[in-house]
Length: 121
View: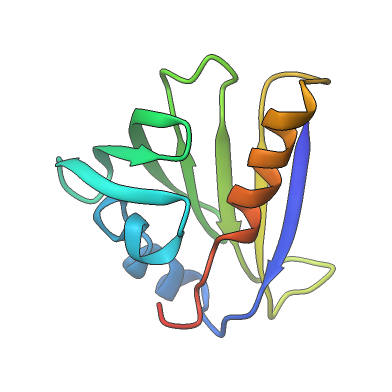
């Protein structure tokens, strides 16, 4: 399943990659409550609306990718800019490795996607 959001932000690729790291996640997404373990910009453990998970960050073309490697649904999300159809916007692309899921979990994914705030980043 895939979920997309266009986020109000004026960050370019370099700005996204510099500001969006694992320790910054609780300040950028209301669905991520706490940084439980800080292992630098690319790794750590967070507590979020689904519980405690290891999170990893990768720098990618146009921005960053975060993943929860221990998530049974393979949750991952990217935040990118500079690409069509809206090269000046920041696009959140959230995915899980299932084509269908129960309505409550889908609702939590929608809530996660809606909880991102980059205007202060």
